[in-house]
Each structure stands twice: as structure tokens, then as C-alpha cells.
Length: 384
Image 1: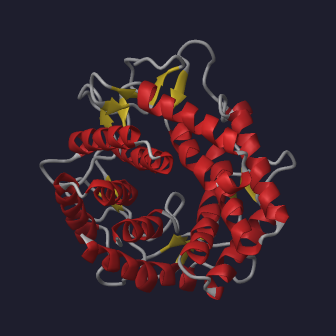
Image 2: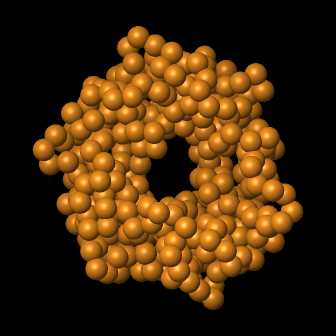
Image 3: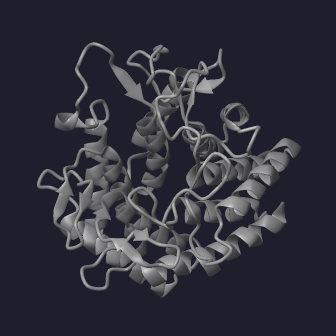
């Protein structure tokens, strides 16, 4: 498996990162363009705050963890200055999107913009050590915690009281975010938060009877037999399991790591398309027609996060099962998402049979994050 460490590291440093360095920078207004064709042409100039923040985090992470490359610091700084100047409203909430010059387009309804802004400023603080960046990360994190039980606030369109559901996505992100910001937080707060979200993930959203992780459960953690309640997202669940593994490894809690590994395999085995290969985007837990019309698409991040989880599992226990699944998912991912013609960043969206669905390298939902983060995490995990 060690042979893959160099392969993934080379792809990261020689293909993917140079693509974003070359094509994504807005040299006039600051920040980054994310809507890029395979050739690197900008096809839309709107700027999505969570993608801006993810790119800041990625370049800061490389600078802090791989090598203090001056060009990576410069790249991160272009994004951090743009976000600091334009990203928030007066209450400290992060907008969803901005125009090219930084003027707000969409209100701060999406708490994940805040989550990735906190990650970005927390990681960039390690680059420069300016306490102003630490404060932004810390304050944003506290705002997230204050909003966690009603993330959309005034922008919530749900009618209250009839079917109150809690979403899997926020506990999942908080599990990782707490570790990302550990250098800025009180140790007791990190421990209490990770305990709480792990309990939610492993004991409420995960159902031991079905072996599935649900995207939404009732406010008391029960299954709700509805479109939303039956919704399964294998990629989300698998990504969450490697977040939980990280917590378990940090705590030297082998029981937690083993449980996360077992749940990860359940989601992967359930989500694998035995007919065409790859992992389904969405599924209905009872096999009914899924709510999401894009249910059978194959998405880049789902497969890359699965490879991260498998790489971490193999690094932990050298399991033949992890090795076999890694090879299987690796072959599908590299043969379908990687661009053999243009190189650089990978494609993101395929139809069920594995044909390219959208000819883009970045857009409204895809930026400089899942591909480079996965390449980094996998190469690090297997380089042992």
C-alpha cells in the first residue's frame, strides 16, 4: 500500500495544486474563482464563501503541514484578505455568496459557510500568528455553537412543531471542526463537544438494527418514515466515520476506532453500485424511489472521502479488507474522475454508468478542497 503514498502525493503537488494556483486567483479583486472549465477558463465570477474559505484552509494546511512554500502562503493570503474584508455581515455571520467584487448576493443562511470560515482563519492563524485571525476563528466558532440547534435562524422555511428533524451534516462537521480549532479552544470544550457530537452520530443517526446512518432523524433521535427520514447519503456517513476515527486515534480509544470502521464498511457495502460500480449519491433506506432526483449520480467527493477512510483504516490495522476495498475504489475513482487529457483538478459529476455529466473542474459546489484534501490525507496515512 505504501506505493500509493507517492502516487497521491505526486498528483497533489504536480497536478491538482498547480491547477488552482494557475487559474483560480482573481488578480483584480482578490479571492478566488471556482467556476473553472477543464482548461482553466473562468465561466462564472460569483464567489461562494465556503469555497473561498476551503481554498484558504487548503493552502494554509499545505504550508503548515507539508512545507512552508512562500507561494502557498501568498495563495492563502489572497483568500483570507478577501474574506476578512467582505465575507461577514455586521453580526459576524458569513454570507453564502458574493459577486466578483465582494458585494453580498445571498444572505448568511448556510451555517457551513461559517464552519469553513472558522477552519480557514484557524489554520491561517498558524501561518502568520496574527491574533486577529485567531479571534475571527474563535468568534465564528462560538456563533456556530449558538446557532447549532436552529442553523438557518430567520431563514428557516420549515413549519415548527409538526415534524422537527435534526440534520446529520452539522454534527459531522463539528466533529472535525473541533479538532481543527483545538489550538484555539479550551481543552474541556473540545472534549465536551466531541463527546456530544459523537454520541449523536454513533447512537442517534446510526441505527444498529439496519446498519445505516440516516441524514435526518427526529429531535429525539428516532427514525421518521418520510422522504427526508429515509434519506441515506453513503458519502456523508463514510466521511463522518474518518472524522470519528481521528477522534478515537487521538484519544487512543481503540473501541471507538473499531466501531467507526465497522460502520464505514456497512455504508460502503450498502452504497456500492454492483451493476455499474461506484457509490450512489443518495439512497432510500427502504428501497423506495429516493427524494433526490440526482440519487444515482457518482460524485467525486463521495469516492475520495471513502478512499481517505479506507487509507486511515489500513494505516491503523493493515486489514486485508481495507486493502481490497481501497484498491477497488481507487481503480474506479482514478479511471473515472481524473482527467487524463488536461490534467490538473479532477472532474466531479458522472452519471450512473460512469460517463462524464458536467464538463467542469469547479463550480458553485466544487472547489479546491475534496480532491487536494483527500490526496493529502491518503498520502500521509499510507506513508508509513
